[in-house]
Length: 283
Image (cartoon, rainbow, N blue to C red; front, side, top):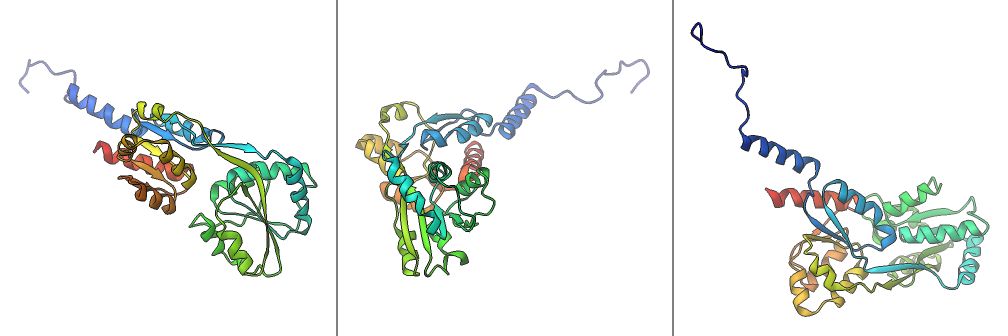
């Protein structure tokens, strides 16, 4: 530089306005990858709070549209009588987080949990709920989170002569109980909560212009489809659908959904799937 020529107070070039905007956008995509996206949560209201919060934290707009309502059984005396059979039970299986919530409340209101009782569940969300209630050892699959996954575990093979109690909602798949019976176990079903179809207005869902929909049970998916007239089905089937199990995905594809993503189980799985989709959507 020639003597007497003014030196720039900024030795490095300042970023152009466009560069700064791009950097801010990249930061937003990293810290809030779901920013501006309307994401429908169809879980029962009582189970949706954690997912709602996590979507909000990542910039998304959660739209709560519960497809099923959960409530306690109407005849508590029948439930208490069945729970009293725990003294003769070798293994208690909780089918869902709701089974944990209502079943454990009934257990603790009775004589408590026998020390010799083994406890199992089909999914990690239910296992976590049991751990939070002080159950240290829970038999649960670590890969496939369903009845088939639980039945594949060694602890569920040697059940001949054992009394197994399955705590669940009203109705549901019979595979678990039927298979355990075929292996020589005595199986008792305990209905510890009730499910019913919600009375939500599907027009509100369509009007909200969702970018993605999460559905976590085949029963909820069927209810959603039943709520729709043909134009609504065509419109909704083109929206990305996120489900935690291939069984739900298969049912969705049969209904006509065009963009179905199977995620890992639980909130972590759904969030990972949504984040990966949002990243692809923006790139």
